Length: 115
Image 1 (cartoon, rainbow, N blue to C red):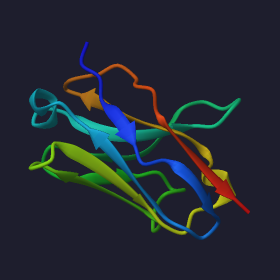
Image 2: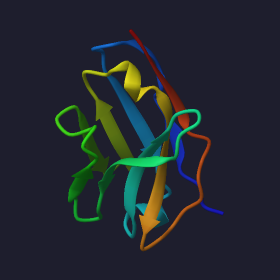
Image 3: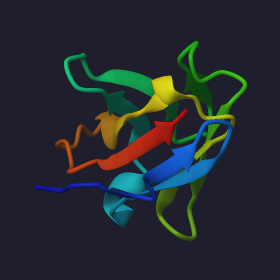
């Protein structure tokens, strides 16, 4: 099965920034919207941001004004720039194709924000 690969997580202090990268297979990149999701222990997996093939973006309220999702066709990648990180952003972050092509969940990348 086609699987997207997340990278770029790490440990950062509150107020810091991270950029996550989602490597998308070329045959998926041009035909599917891509979303970044996150899941903290004991919670459900929630959509953080998404981007359509045409570049339209959507953000969860918690991400608005701090996170930016973008896509680079030359690199077949989708990025999540996260600024002004807060301890509440600590989660495993996943990317996923969710329409019209749906891809399986990957391993995710851990983001830990210390106070």
